[in-house]
Image (cartoon, rainbow, N blue to C red):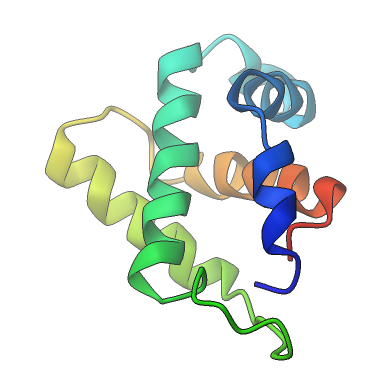
Length: 105
């Protein structure tokens, strides 16, 4: 993670609003605030698991979007969270776009 301090500017409610705003129209009403928070938490867990929060300021971080999506699908199934597999890329991409807007990675 190149800009570790930017994590502290992360706001969960802002993230949810951002993601809801960028979702395709047919998905905007389909997923609740809690569903979207679940996705943000899963993405964070993925980063922790991959060691992306380790203090490596001089290293470029590579984000594998497909791997994050697969991880999120697996977690949702395991946790019994009802998010359709075909919708997961939109939700994860929304979270990644929000992080990018903050300059997190």
